[in-house]
Length: 373
Image (cartoon, rainbow, N blue to C red; front, side, top):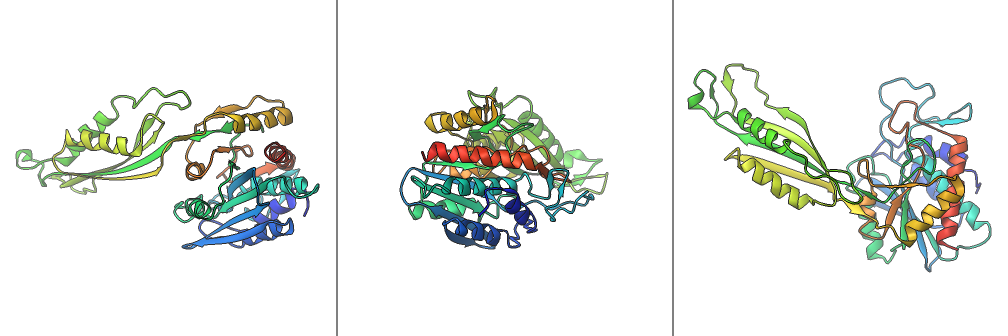
């Protein structure tokens, strides 16, 4: 097994694993890990292919987490085919190059380099899902449950999401905000627009309710988190007639919330606010993840020390951005995120410089050595 991440990154990119299709990506990864001596367990939940691999049976136990599924290539034309894994002027192009097949390849290469001197002093594992870019129902959340039930609990987990804005070593994510989506339907009484006294206009009620919900910030942030945000993302009446007051008006909103709130507390707040403006309404809430924080301590300090030594930068500890599968892993063990520069993730011509890919493998090797000395 080569200690250069490039061949494996190319092989993974050449699997068109647009979520939820695996397209052979986990077969490629499993073969690479088995050649290194990892015991690989394939975990299929529903239609989703997942993988758990471990070498070693004692502690300390370091886990790496990631995903082999990717978003679609999109309609725009790429300068290199999105699933060809093509090299151009020292840059690797392809969907998943930075999010996050490149990071997976870098970690496997780092493991290969570490294992050249013999078995690890402790255990090294990988939790790889095919459902991070999809519904996140049969992926990491199910694997975490399986790991807990089967005594596979790491001391620490590093997720290889692309955390850096411009240079390797800038950002470690130690938490994420929670995410809540609310579907609102306010019911009124249909009627003629010329006789509003005979109707009850739900659009007016909905507008007043949304105005109240967005009138003031949810909070001013907390020690480790920026302020929570509420965004109305859709208002839909579906009324083609200008002279008819509709019977129902709907809205969709999303709240990204910090540790001052929970999904339950925000749901109660929404329900109370809507009740002030409508007697009849439906509220359907989906919480894709609660906020979480890995409090800085010895494990995070080890990460910081490796990044300082390898990059010469002082990494920022951050909790911004969207959600990631770390929101599920935090139920199992302490977790942080560090990966490639995310400038081109989900974009046309997603790519990573080969030098950066190899630098990440070197950094990951340092992380393995720090946690399994």
